[in-house]
Length: 168
Image (cartoon, rainbow, N blue to C red):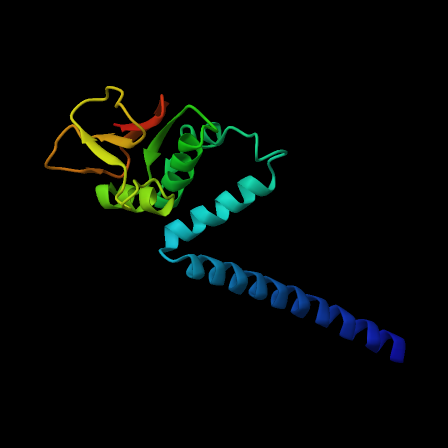
């Protein structure tokens, strides 16, 4: 009879152990998302982590292909800009997952160290999608009074010579 009682205790402890593991996993994922800040951006960063983890050779991978036809957030914009700036890819066509402002682009440029000798961002606002001259990041704003990409709007980023061009 004592064996039957021990077996019964084991059956009760298995569901408890599974429940504890599920709660622990949820807490860890929540912490990672919270630590990244801005709920949606944190999940995108976690997604980026797993995307890089499962790429066979991330150093030679075309980052732009991974982002083509996807929603992008500020962190993704920085990743694609870095790949373009460093010549790891040529172009990407994406959709804004949230409003992306001129300030978001400037922050990405500064974070990547795309600055001149005085520390000023190498950035230009353009009225067309023509290739800029000189090493800089140029953004075409169709309406100069609205310097942002609305959620759901298309964003094209491409390398042009030694510059990166961002267009709607």
